[in-house]
Length: 266
Image 1: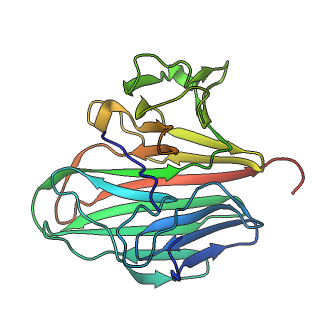
Image 2 (image 1 turned 30 degrees about the horizontal axis):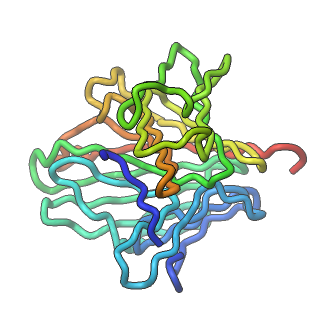
């Protein structure tokens, strides 16, 4: 599988960095560079973090950024390079390929948030590399991909058909979590700038801020990936960047903007 969300094991005693404006809240674990909470400040979390015993190399769930390609590297543990009331900058260690990863998290307003991943190198022509930012969904969620502009959903692995995993409505491709039929390492993809995660509390929209002109240079030719695996209860939605070589002064930057829309009063 090109995209996994292993159901392993809350980081016990983890020191989390928190951005909270009273309306939305994001919690980040610098040790793993994992977002363990993304949602409304009153307790409605859109991601599912997993418990990992201290010292174990397990999957922390939540939302994580991964570097793809021959120069792929572990991103953490990271240090807090800058901290403000509405901004957090985390910087990981330089790896054996000369790559250094940074994550910049910014509260933009009452219901908006920016997640920026940056990969730097002091060496010439490292890569090509790509960013993949994948979230693990809670089992009462629905992924929605707007069909604006003729966006098509494709089966990439684990199934030859979209049914029963995808429901086509007038405006959206809908993927219930868990799926309505048993899924074993099902991977779906689309070339689209946005994915929405719907829960009872409201809607979380993730949007790629600089959409590539074509799908040709994007892994799987899909900026959006959906992973559905019933045996491990792993259900994820990823956004990813095009391939790019990284060089001095030419970082690989991938930016998402998030909006949180509450359902009903609030």
